[in-house]
Image (tube, rainbow, N blue to C red; front, side):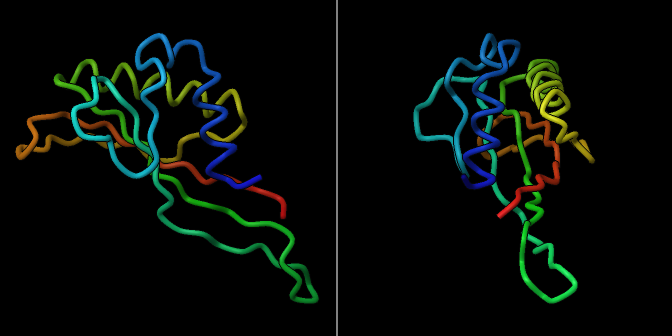
Amino acid sequence: MSAETELYAVLAAAAGLTALVSTRIYPDAIPEDSALPAVVYSRASTDPVLSVSGQKFAETARFQITAWDKTRTSSAAVADQVQAALLAAWQPAINRSSAFDGEVGLFATTLDSDWFTVS
């Protein structure tokens, strides 16, 4: 199972999160004309975990998970639920930031998470 599949499963199973976004949890981008709020996740990097002999046995994927909505408050509320879901899965967020995208008029709250997956 890929790290993306595991991450999606954790987010989709989080009752507090799905109460806010329903099934609007997307890889890479929000589809055009989708309702809000929504969550977007993307893999920012991947680091292999190697044995002493150089054999890859796991990897750490860094994800950026962004909650999007029309207000900063609601974006932050969705991010709070993402953060709770990650913590419950023992994959805590390691960074949190917020932004406003003036082109689309939406607020974003982004969490970074390092996801450890055994190969």
